[in-house]
Length: 249
Image 1 (cartoon, rainbow, N blue to C red):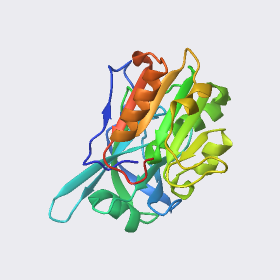
Image 2 (image 1 turned 90 degrees about the vertical axis):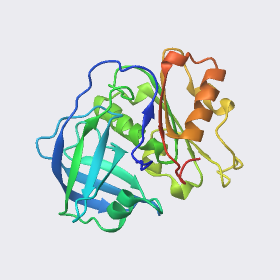
Image 3 (image 1 turned 120 degrees about the vertical axis):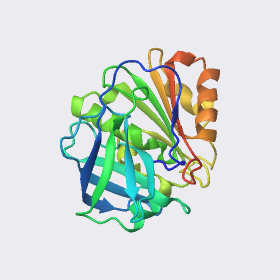
Image 4 (image 1 turned 135 degrees about the vertical axis):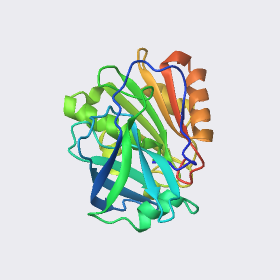
């Protein structure tokens, strides 16, 4: 999902020890491009450690001269999926994203490490409100697929902000789950272009939910402020940010 110079950020302490895996050489099994600026990779990872929804993987590239670059990408697949699914946004100056988007083909090998992360995870037990911007929806797709496997889609409510409908990854899957989709650069039905507002979130929030927010730093900060303004307790809000992204709303 992200390529912010490798930076990822969450808030608050870890809740418990989450599963973690070491470096593996994965085999690329599927490659497709669901939106103009993204590539979807499905990887076969040997001796894989099953992940929790909301965790991520690191992809590492090594040049012939030994130079290495690595970036973190959220998992879109559920733990029950036999393959690991990553969505990569192609950045104009992205060392890793450019290679993954333009060069990688089925059958190629990739160095990966994961799963990683223990704060921004959903285990399929508690109700949750998911608020994503642009490619920040990727971990929520993993949560949604996990909920579907458990027969507990009723636990999730989803709000998504994107610049245009064409730029939203997993749009059909999210809409099929009843997600509210807000477009900031174009009209959506009778709704004019505009950012996500507190009015949008009021019908989705219920006491007892954990709120997950994921997107670019400006989006994550704005969405978190909306939730706090609505009275959502700060300890119930988990935030994951990534660097500048043209896909965020």
